Structures are given as structure tokens and as C-alpha cells.
Length: 383
Image (tube, rainbow, N blue to C red; front, side, top):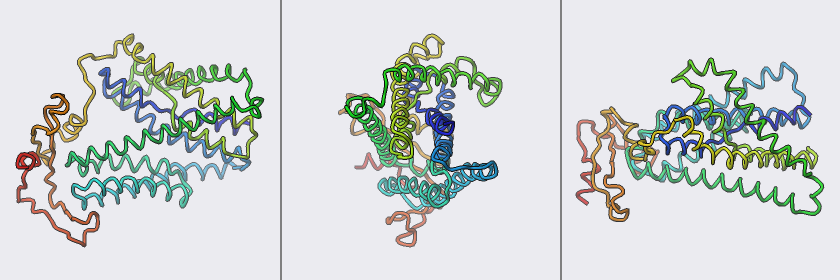
């Protein structure tokens, strides 16, 4: 069944290089390579899910002719991102009416993700994943100043979304592990899987890695001339750092719950995806430091970028922000590890504030751009 096989291939294509990105930052590898790997994963996941949904419908018996495919694919690729672009614009416009309110910022960023996904996926019949990706890119590009004028808001958003990401990944891994363990332990399901399937799992892992290397080799003449330019060392890191993770496991769980496929094929999908994730996490992730040392890509003097450093870099050269350094109240708790706390205060022209969140007609007040307000560091000193 080529449709079912293509669906499995799309599922295996989704990458999750979070662990590799952390290693690259810890070892001081150039930031451009981390951005390429992270951007590749971001768009790759969206494309994988789009192809997965297409092949899933075909594997379930839906026949699409050439004309229908010619209309369906552009609808998936363009309508969802356009919806995400519109919602992202509205979200950034709403943030202008929110001042130093972490709860509203958290609620807004969470709700627009689900709203964008629902509108694009359910109402428009397009790709909800691509819509959410575009929303995130738009807010990252144009909405970041409205978050980073306050350390409290910036840290709240960072911790909240970090916890959401960690929780979602943990739940998916636990559920997948329990399903595989049940299939191996249950007497009624022991005959579904065979010992030969373990050999296929190893061969599949090797094939996935070689396919990744082949695709980069074919595109190398283009990749070496685009952007900052990739060399063979960068391509080696991208190939070996293409871990599989939560996105592929989530798609495998969807297939496992489908009654349209026979029991063995559903079990093989969850087994193949789970084994590929485990092997990439154990083999690729643990050997990545040695590969970085062998290729001489490490920089011992470079340290992992902290939140304060990231904020400094984000506003470097921006005269709209004042930076005042004041001693942190938590310095004594951490033994002097953090001697300086950076505070950022924007001075947006005509910035509108309201005590009632994003509803400007209640308590709306324009800030006089000529009136200089006290810096956050000064307020901390007074307190």
C-alpha cells in the first residue's frame, strides 16, 4: 500500500533537534548553524504534517485525481499561513494595549494558538499547523518588544511556554511507551509483532539517516551558496542532529487509533516510530559532542546565551529602550552567580496603556512621549 507507506515516510520525516540545539549552544558552535537546524525543523514539521494528512486520507480510501490534488495542495500550503498572518497581525495590534500584565500576555499567546489552529484546520479546511507556525513567526518578529519591556513578563512567558513544551513532550513519550510495552507484554497481542521487526527497526534507523544525508548531498550546491553558506561540516552536523521526537510520535498515535487499518500495520507504525525516536536520542544525541570535537566546531570560550544576554542582543542599537543595571534581590540566594539584573523599559511613542487589558475604551490613557518616566531600576532602588 503505497499511500500507507508514504504516510509512514511523512511521519518519519518530522525532526525534533531540541537536544542538539542545546548542545550546539553549550559547545559554542556558530549561531548560524543552530538557526538553520531550528528553522529546518520548524518548517519540516509543518510540511510533514501536511503530507501526513494527505496520505492518511488516501490510505483510508479517498481517491484524489490530478485536478483535485492541484487544488488541494495550494489550499493547504497557502490558506493556513494567510490565516496565521492575519491572526498574528491582530494579536500584535492587541498587545499595544497591554502594559506589564503577564496574565493577559500569557492568555493571549495561548488562545491565539488554538484559535488559529481551529480556524485554519476545521473551518477553512487548510493546515492548522502552518497557521500556528506563521503566528509564532509574526509575533516573534513584531511582537517581541511588547513582551521584553518587563523582566517579569518576559520570564513568565519563557517559563510558561517552556513548561507547556516539556509537559506535552513528556505526555506523548509516556503514552507511546505504555502502548509499546502493552503490545509486548499482552498475551493476546504477542503474535502481532515478530522478532524480525526489531531488525527492521534498526535497518529503518540506518535508512532514515542515509536518506537525510543524501538529500543534503543533492542540495549541497545550493545550500553552500545561500545565506551564510553551509560547508560539509555543517551538513554532517545537520544530518547527525536530525533527531526524531514528539511530532512523529503524535502522528503515530493518531494512526494507532484509526480503525481503518489492520492491527499489525497500526502496531508496526507505533513500533517503527518509537524505535527511530529512541535510537536517534540514544545514538545521535549522545555521540554529537564527539562529532563536534572531531570536526573542530567547538569554541570553549563561548558560553550558552542567557535570557538577559538574549534581551541585550535583541535590543542592541535600539534607542527606544533604556537599560539600567541594578543589583538583584536574589543575588544572595544564588551565591553571586548573577550579580546584575538587567531591566528594560521601552519608551514607545504614543504607547497606549489601560488597566483593563486589551479593551481600550475602559481606562484608556495615552502616554505623553515628552514626559520621561522613571526607569525600572530606579523604581527598584526606591522600593
